[in-house]
Length: 225
Figure 1 (cartoon, rainbow, N blue to C red):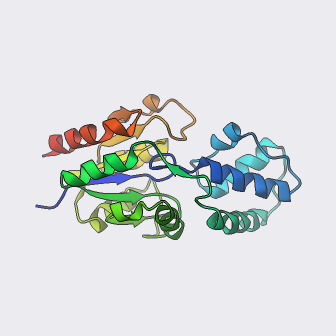
Figure 2: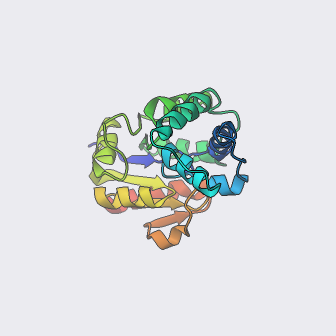
């Protein structure tokens, strides 16, 4: 029998990456002669990808975006972020305990993110978390992005399982839409980067601390048979 799979989003789910993402956004804004954003405002812009974050940041400062400029700003963002990817980013509390408990119960673990795979691996390597995951998949791994269900199905297969014995864990509307499209149960964390109350998005379960994750994930997997 194939192993049960628990698939995690990365930013705002496994790791609090907001400090380094917002720092990088503000660096890009300052280079454009734009005042930096307060942390909480910048944090609320995470979730749609780097390009969207840059667009939101410029819009918040009423700075017009000239045609062709987004590619240049995106490249500048990635260059700086890659070099500072784990300066202040840290795993959420009790994460490794939860991962270890799931592994002890026979689960294979995977990451499915819209971050580039190479950046995801660099971050997880820096935080010594990569060892926990049978697959680490980004928007460039399969050529499709969340919420396209193919990215979740292929991540599950790469981790050694199938969608009938899998659970998704995420923090945003994109993660919940992905899981629904893939016909996979979804657990939402309430400490991530969604800009609306997570309960309003209709996940199967909500957790407010990783202490509770393993029991809930195992129960959902048990229900799937």
